[in-house]
Length: 323
Image (tube, rainbow, N blue to C red; front, side, top):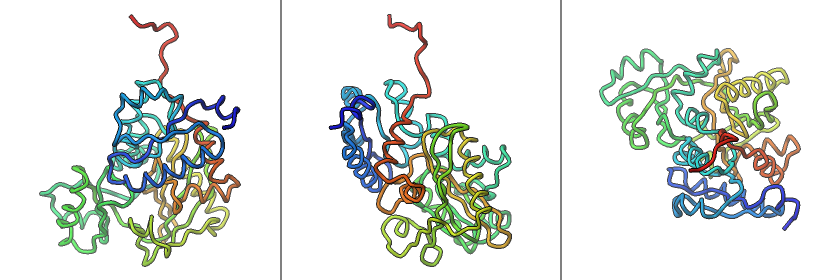
């Protein structure tokens, strides 16, 4: 084990698995991160919050943790809050930024308040006026859970009559369901590293999925989906997308790392922010490692850089003492 890595990072926990609907992907991400950190001499250990309690996490006396959990109970601010209480620095955005980013509707409200373009949307209920929703947002449109990732529970609706079934599917994953304007065009994603003014956008990845359907299967398991990085965009358009991604990241108060998903409308070339992932995938099909490699940052070093940025949002007052 590298003495330098041990001295810099101490004992590191890699949190993966968890209880969300994205557990399978998290297991793959976390295994990759754990192997990479250990290969660099980091004293890294696995920890699955679905199988072990927070009391056991505290007992491990980790000096910092790498969060490789996806979705609820890992990416939504709840775990971040627990780690703040325990005083264990962690990777990725803090409590508030994680909670907002996990809520797609709230994320959109923040972006709109900051003048950032995002598709129009409406929140749905079981008794929604489906025709009115279709008339307002236009067809086709997207129906999806407001607090899930990895396209889980998502439906592309082409007729208002399909809305009740689309709502019912999304509602299996979340009590909050939203409809979103469908943007036809080019699908892109842009990873982000750092904090505040020093944050930087990595190269844009262009996603070309079979039949333009980037669903759960095509995202994680298909070899037919193509990822272009460099994206092939004109330099000025690449710069525009990277700046929009940075603006979206900063507006939510993110730090450490994230990945912003963007659609570029075919009719006029206008970019629209879809969502931001505050604990992106780190699997063999994942896009942050792909982009980082193009930027000259191989997987192992990417994991080290992310771990190096582990932090707490809050720190005890200097004069605080226990009773």
